Length: 604
Image 1 (cartoon, helix red, strand yellow):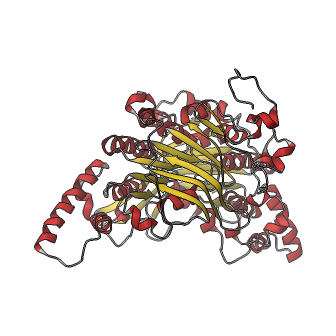
Image 2: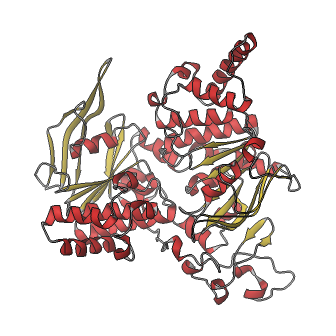
Image 3: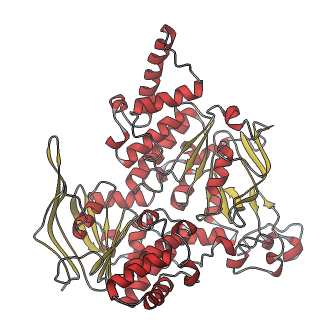
């Protein structure tokens, strides 16, 4: 008997034009001890189907089915089935300590004493891969990293002692190293406890790494199902083939280098003056968070990618560049001139624009698209609010420019009078890009702008950035933890760890041949949409930011090549043919003098 058995499930919502069927007569199963996957792009109905299984849809939803059972019984959340959601922070009470939240679940399930519940909670945290669980139980959710919070949510799910765990996009917001850890943790939990799992995801790499059986969902229907090998190596449906093509690089991977953004850096002469430059910038929030002695530069027409795990300092660097934060030490230059910290926002005057990870949160829900774009233009131009004949002429030009920008970003002028709630996630991100580019910036900063999008939508947004960049020629700082995207869109790459840059250079060379041990770990942790290759991924240990030694190499505690000097000295910048590496393995003083004709290669 299957652990989960769903037969002929349909979900409808009432609309002004009649009932809209979101899930259309789908059936699927999960066997005991199995990890099954439900994949599909955003809007395919995956999450709606899971919420229907859990009985968590609101009263407006009309749910019909022939059977939904967990081991032959009706699913009861918190008893025989538990769910892990994408946003771990929203699942945890921010005002209640971690230990109490787990203990409450343990006591509701086991009816035990507080002492027994505390002991069981520590066991569950250890099982979920959290070191020093006694300390973590005394902390609040906001004191933990994203990966640790996801482990806490898993511990709470295990406290229910369920027969089935449904995981809905649980690794989407995590960097490659933490994601690899969570995936291996899921495998171990299923193996050791016998719990079954249903992984809901738009990430084909994650699905390949974790699942033995896969259901492909599109337009509310199950398009195709089979073993992971069947789906990934010999798909029968065109939609599945499209998902796999997009996950493996899609149409952009076939572009000629001279036609893509990756060719733009070759057109930038090395002697060109950078548009923006940071020199020895430091910004410390507490003893362990922030950036230290960071230097980077962006030239006209290039895309510089910043990669690294959560908390490495990528977003802090971007906020300093955009003027949202001021540095504690160091210097920021704009076209060779020092930027005054207090007047940075005034000096930029819209020349630097930002596209954020969550497009809905970055848009005002009370403004139409036209109003949002017009507001951006008005802020850049500092227009007066008094309406004159000249102002009305300017308004006509504003409307014309808005319509042109909407067309350029793949939307229509008719979309201008709609609100953000009327659009999909990918369309909202297009609006965010349109709002940033309508003021014709010199630099576009994309902060995890694609991390929450499915593979198909991500390909569309990547193609959009390619096309507009060729027309406008802006420079771009692209922040991401997705190495698949980074290696395809960027000219140069800067790898960050513990607030430091550890390696920089041309993206193609670094991705093909990483020299720094951390860069190698980061690249090797990326799951490929291939079950055999994805199964070989080994999760490297990830330490807390508090474990980083500020007086030595930030990565020394996790490095298999660490020397005695790594704990007491900070590596200098060693440059070799366009690549800069911050590692003592490339120092003559620490690794031995090399002959004058020696050509440096990777030392790892």
